[in-house]
Every structure is written in C-alpha cells, then in structure tokens.
Image (tube, rainbow, N blue to C red; front, side):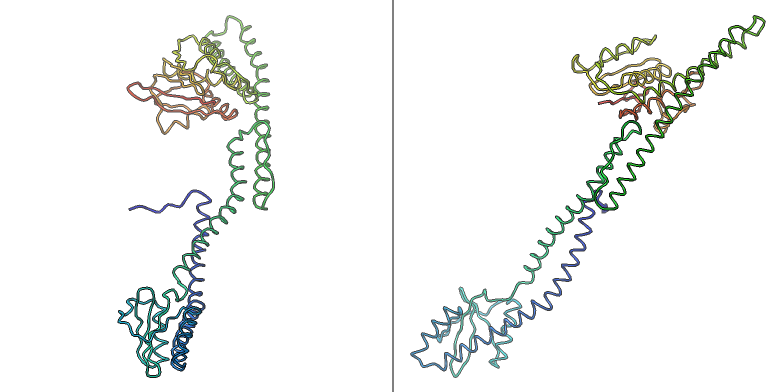
Length: 427
C-alpha cells in the first residue's frame, strides 16, 4: 500500500495548501451560487417560458384566421416559437433536464391539465389546449437554464489557474532569498572574504540575511583568530624545543643513553605535531593558482621512499587546475602516507578533476568512516598506536578540503582486493 508523501518543494507544498483552500472556497461559492442565483434564475426562466407559450396560444386563438399567419411569422422570427394547428405524432421527451421538468410543471399549473414535452427532429414541442383548439408549439432545445456543472468547471479551472500563478509568484519571492542563503551557506568555508547577502525584501527574509551575514562574519573572524593562535603557539614552541634538544646534546656521557633516546623520541613527536599545526595554518590561508597536475603529482610521489603505483588518466595539457599548491600537496601526501602506513602498497589514480588513493590494508568499517577525520582518532582493531604518526593527518586533510572547497570521500575497495579508498575531488 503506497503512503502519501509530503512534497519536498516549497512551491508544491504552498500550491497544495492554496489549492485545498481554493477548492473549499469554490465549493462554498458554488453551493451559494446554485442556491441563491442559479436555482432562482432557472425557476423564473421556466415561469417566463411557460407564460410566453400560454400567452402565444391565447393570442393565436383570439386573432382572426387571416391574421394568424402574420402572428406565427412574428413569433418565429422574434421568439423562435413555431405555432402549428396541425398535430404531429411525436414521442415524449426522455430524461428531460431539471429546467424542462420545471417548464412542464409551470405549464401544467397554467393550463390546469397534465402536460408532456415532445421531441421532434430539431425542436421540442408541447400540446397546448386553448379555446377549443389543440395547438402544438415548438421551441428550441437551447432555451434552457444556466448549466451548474459547466459553471462549476469554469470556476474551478479559472480558480486553479489563479492559485497556481499566485502561489508561483509568492514562492518565488520567498524561495529566491532562501536559495541565496542556501548557496552562500554551501560555499561558505569559514575563511576568506565573505560575500554578504542583500538585506532586502520582506522583514523576515531581510532579518534572515542580516543574521546570516553576522554569523558568517563572526565565524570567519573566529576561525582566523584560531588559525593565527595555532600558528603563533606552534611557532613559539620551536624555541623551547630547540633548547631541550641542545640540553640533551650537551649531557655528560654518564647519563643513561636509553633515557636520552626516549627523550629524543618524545621531542620528535612534539616536533611532528608542531609541524602539522604550522602546515595546517599556512594551508588554510593559501590562495589558489593554476597548476599542471601531472608533473606536480609526479614530484609528490617521488618524495616517498616507498614505491607508489601511479595511474594517470589525464593527458598533458588537459591537467591544469586551480588549486592551492601547498595545501593540495599536504592533503595528497597525508593520504598517501596514511595508505603506506596502514596498507603497505598504495595506488594513486589521477583523473581530470579527482585523485583516488587506494591501499591494500584491512579497510575501514562503514560506521567509522566519518570518525576517522577526527583529531587523534584511531581504529584499535586495525590501526594501532604502534604504527606512529601524530593522529592529525586525516583531520588536517578534512580541514584543508573544507577551507578550499574540495571534497574528500572515503570508502573501501570493491572486488576481491581489500583496502581503503580515499577520493579527493577538487574540480
């Protein structure tokens, strides 16, 4: 059994609401129109038609025989009535409309005898006994009342058209600013110059645009201050770190060498964390420029000691892209380093607007594919702390992608080969 679903479009929802309201209004108006306008007009029209038929018969009887043909001609030309003294054998009218039922009732009341309407080839006829004569008067079948069904259909169609275009106008005026807000929110990365939305239109929409502009500006300032603070702290930590290394270097030989080695390993870890923070801070502020990706990616792959398989599916001259070079280099190096660290063998597939990094490691569980971009997050079952690393590699990847409008997708390799798949989309 199908379940009715609420339309997702604002236009569709508004149109349905307005259509239901309009249908109720049209129904109420139609009922009132029928009860207080159409029905009284139909009754009065039947009354007038019956009076005309009876009066025509009375006049015809009272006229001298030589004047009757002129009267018949006048009634035919001016009132579409055919008066005949000759009786025709015609069948009774079957299934007469409500109007002709009323006409029969009014004629019966005026003539004080039962009356039946007869159906001819082109006309409807009625037998009218008058002054000892039996007359047959014919009249056009088009002489009938206003048709309620046709009137209702016209009202509904016109009302539906008005409702559609009215709702279209209303929704366009409402949806256009909302679409601008949605587009701006999608493009907003929290850094750089924010293009403010126009604070015009209805009060509510102007307030929405003003609040969005304020929010975007505050977030930009907050992120810029955070990045500046991170870069400053990381830079300032280099000085005490250098002093600690110098102190270790001048320790006397009597100090336990294993203790010195542990201190040196800890200092190396601290230095790696500081370097990651500085690279991230610089990468978020970098401006995009045109880069030839084939030599650029080749240079990055050559910087690794381990061999990395490279499948280039772009042609020279068609591999130019607008990217921030240092940030792009850091993202790709972190993805390749992550694959080498946890998979062993890495394949880089380069296409026109994306680069995919594949490894042959244990893969990433689906429920953890979004969590791996959190700082210091580890998959205990497959990626232990013994593998080393600062725990910020993938977090930096995501932050740099967000800052430059790139997309990073994570999944597992399909087929018989196990391993993780990271796809960087920069086009």
